[in-house]
Every structure is written in C-alpha cells, then in structure tokens.
Amino acid sequence: MTSRHPGAPCAPTRDEIARLVADTPASGPSRRIGLLAAIATFGSLLFGYDTGVIAGALPYMYMPAEAGGLAIDEFEEGLVGAILAIGAAVGAIAGGRLSDRYGRRHNILLLAAIFVIGTLGCTFSPNVWALYVFRFVLGWAVGGASATVPIYLSEQAPTRVRGPLVALDQFMIVFGQFLAYSMNAALSYGHGGPRARVASDPTGAVDAGAWRAWDDLARIGGVVVDAGNGQAWRWMLVLATIPAICLWVGMRLMPESGRWYAANVRYAEAVASLKRVRSDGDDIAGEVQEIIDAREREAVEGRWSLRRTLSTRWTRRLMLVGVGLACFDQLTGINTAMYYLPKILHAAGFSSADSISINVVTGAVACAGAGLGLWLVGRLARRHVGIYQETAVTLSLASLALVFAVGIGPHMLADGTIAPSVPGVLPWLVVVLVCLFVFAKQSGTVNWVLLSEIFPSRIRGVAQGLAVGCGWLMNAVVTYVFPVMMEHVGAARTYAVFAGINVVALCFYLFVVPETRGVSLERLEESFASRYGE
Figure 1 (cartoon, rainbow, N blue to C red):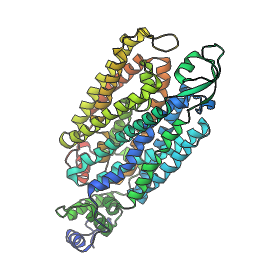
Figure 2 (figure 1 turned 30 degrees about the vertical axis):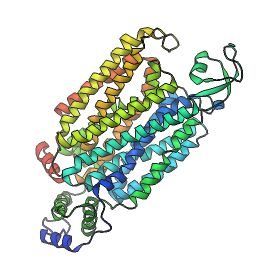
Figure 3 (figure 1 turned 135 degrees about the vertical axis):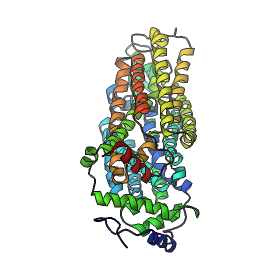
C-alpha cells in the first residue's frame, strides 16, 4: 500500500480500497441501523431515567428517617441533583478519552456496568452522604453516555439519516424521563403518597397512631413520627437496573464503530464493521476513502492535543461553539422542570402526591415534543430548529414568571403555602405553561446533533467530552441553585432570570452557531477550516 503524502502512514489507494471492500466479509450478522440505534440509546434512556427519577423520589427523601426518608432540606436536595451532574461532567470528559482510545462500543459496555453499580448503591444508601457517593458514580455513567452514544450513532449512521438518528438519542433521554415519572406516579399511588404515622403531636392537632399525609404534618410542625412509607424512593431508583442490563446484553450483539476502526488504521475491520450496518446500495468504499483522506491530513499535521485545538483559530471557534451549545442547553432551565417539577407544582398549590402524578402529564408532553423534534431535525436546518426552540422557551419562561408574580404571589402565606383564596385556574395555568415550555424545549433540541457533527475526527472524542463536561458542570450549578432560589427568591424572580438567559442563547443561535445539515462529517471539517481559517 502506498502513501500519498510525505510523512503520512501507509494508506490504501482507491483501487486497494475497492478490492478490500469486495474481498472483506462482514464481521458478523447484519444489523439494521434502526436496531443498532434502539440498542445504543438504552444508554440515553438510562440518562433520562436516572436524571428524571429524582423528581418523584425527593418528596419521600424529605421525610424523616423514622418514616423511611432521609430528612433532607433544600440545600441537600440541590446537592442530590448537582452531585450527579458533577459526576456526569467527569464521566463525559473521561468517556470521550476512553472512547477515542478503546472504542465507542467498548465504552458503552463499560457504562452499562457502571449504571448497575451506581443504581444499586443509590438504592441501598443508608443516609444522604452515601447517596452522594453513589449519585456521583451514577453521574459517571450518565455523562459517559451523553458523550459516547451520540458519537457512536453519528459514526455508524449513513449521512442521509444521521441527523434524525442522533435526534433519536434526545428522544430516548426524554422517554427515559417520562418512564421515570410514570414509575414514580405508579409507586406513589400504590403507597398513597408520602405518609407517616404520628407518635406524638405537641399541638394536639393529630392523635397518636394516626396516619397522615406528610405535607400536612410538615405544615403543622413539631410532630414526632415513628413510621412511614418513605422507602418508596428506593423502589423508584432500583428499576433503572433493568434497562442497564438490556443495554449491556444488546451492545454485545452490535459492531464497533467502523469510523473508529478506520481512524485507528484498522481498515479491514472498518470495512467488515460497516458491512454489518450498511445496505447493498451504500458506497462503503467512498465512505472509507473520506475517512482515510481525513486521517492522512491529521497524520501530516501531527497529533492534536487540547492545547493545539484551542490555539488554532478554526478548532478553537468550534470548541467554543460546542461549549456554548452544551451550556446554553442547561441554561434553558429544562432540568428545573425535569428534576423539580413536583416542587414547582407544590409551590403553585398542588399536594406532593398530586404533583408526582401530574409530572407524568408533562413527561408525556415532553415525549410528544421530542417526537416532533425528530421530524424537524430531518427536514429543517439545524440552526432554524435551535432558533425556534430558544424563542418559544423564552416566551414560556417569561409567562411563568408573570403568572407567579401577578397571579400566585399575592396569595402566598408566610409559611410558603398557598392561601385557599387563590383562583383555582392559576395552578392549572402553571401546568399548561410548564407543558408548553417542555414541549418547546424538547421539540427544538438540536444541540446533541450539532455536538456530534461540528468536531473534526482528530479531536471528536476529547472535544465532545470537554463540551459535554462543561454542560454538565452548568447543569450542576442550575440543579443546585434552583431549589435554593425557589425557597429564598421565589418562583417569579427565578423564572425571570432564566427567561433573560435564554434571550442571550437566542442571539447565540442567530449569530454564532454554524449549519451542518446534509454534509458528511469529513466535508464539514474541510468547510470549517476554510471558513474560519487557521
């Protein structure tokens, strides 16, 4: 085999590639790209389940230890969510490096095992400190999945379906959250909502031995309990082991990324892998040639470190765009609804039990939005989808802030509860606006598609890991401060702040984000280098 560039490693010529494609058999049974995507996105479903399940678990965690809870407060509540996000940031960065070194499929198999370990550790945590440790471990798996699964899908997918296939990843995240809300609601309903048995009540309002809703007992204050159904949160968490096992078993049947093989000069294995996921009419030789051309350019230029990436104008710009996409995705405030909706609805006047049940409705709306997002990504420019998302999210958040400020705020009592005089339509108006918010966000989520497309192959794993890691750090900030802001600043001001941030995000999509639709990953690299210069 010959080399066409001085200093580049030996690479096959076009004729040699054609012979290699003709002579190399597939490395195993054929796998339809849809089946491959369905299996790989179990990692995304776990991402969604493990981030969404906490919404229904938190009301039970607030209960005292005697009632089966963890007796947490709003600061510890924020940490329960934030520590997973911090772990996810570390997992995303480490996962990007591991997937570059050992392969995308290898990394997903490892993540499936970590999902099981983290889930079981969280389930059997005796106190909140042990829960923090295993939420961090679980975060490693969530972050690794968020960085690795989109890359695996984008590298395995033919160009014609790459956008919708990577958008499926986002849909499965949302479906995982919906599944978590549904399981939360079913378990909460089966337990009758958060309830505890009274041991003594200094006020005399409740007789000893009586079972009451925890909301009512917490409002009275000073009540001593000796039993309860707070253990329900453990059942909510442990169910995540089922899709984790499915992910591990399913990925054992899937091929490694053909592009990863080619990027590591394993061309015969690349062809054998691609043959398992391509139809007879696909141009495998042309696909391999594009990968080889890109790798030859990398070989001539030398190995790209993160420092070199940031010191080169066009890769630095793409790195900043990637970090911006990841961070602004968190600053939409979507995870305040995904993690804390029962808290939001409780602030609007609903009971904890009703809030957990209503959470299923918003989860279903989010799934419907993500389904529309699959259609939009396949038919519209990436930037246009992002612009639609940010416009609709800003309007929804501003409307929520207005309803809390003008409608619900005047009926708030000194203890933080809602007076009976509040018009009955207002809490339901909050539900409607939250539904519009999550529908707009999920139907317009295009950042994961863009992140899987904008980075050149020489830095794709590391750059995606760094960008997603920064996004998870921003997630940790938002997750921690939201319950504290709700408690000490109020819902109206909290949502006004997020609405203002999304105006900035809209400008980012309008003036900074590049378009990537309908172009191969290698052609995009050439276009970015030419457009933004060295």
